[in-house]
Length: 257
Image (cartoon, rainbow, N blue to C red; front, side, top):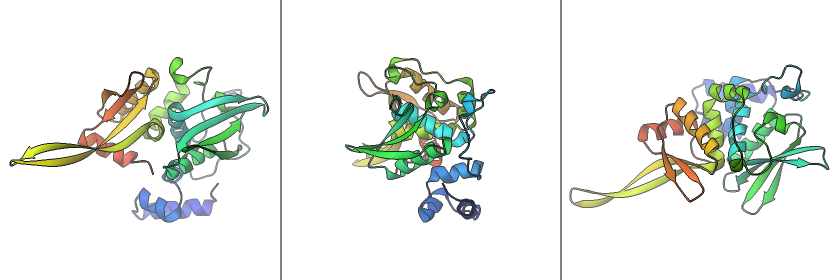
């Protein structure tokens, strides 16, 4: 948790016209955390209990963090019962190659459940960012037996309101988990000479048609053009390749780091 002085000093750098990337590199604070402070600078109280278990259920207090974590969970996350702890473990798989993603995932978990600790468990080629709580199924009602692509995945009304309010955070979570930004290339003949051309594009791949639809519906709402692209017999991909749409994705998401 960062103190108020650090948060205010960081936002002051942004107010000077600095980019989010440059401020993040200078301070060592993730872009995700800085972006969430622009919505709410005050730290969430560690005494906060589950908002979904109150007599009048309400959405999580930090909607920006939740939208991002929801995307991560639907992409590369799972919730499993921990009888010995009397609760559940939320695990998000993050590749070792993207330390910035690991930090952003940890920050999001802490911001959504600040009263629960977050640990990183090393695995071969990746880490499992993990947090234990009795209330993860309350916050992610898509949890259920079996794999996500083997059961219906439908957002509840309160989740839909959060995604509608913070669509780019949700898309960032999806792309950071089961997506990527790559550079494609092709060759063309110009003036009798064969030349190589490179162009960036985004992909999101998942085996759940419901999760793919959540992704494409949100892309439609933010004005990103996409097309389907089959990657294997099981998985389906969404491709974003048009220059204006890639530029929009770069402005709000960017490559993993």
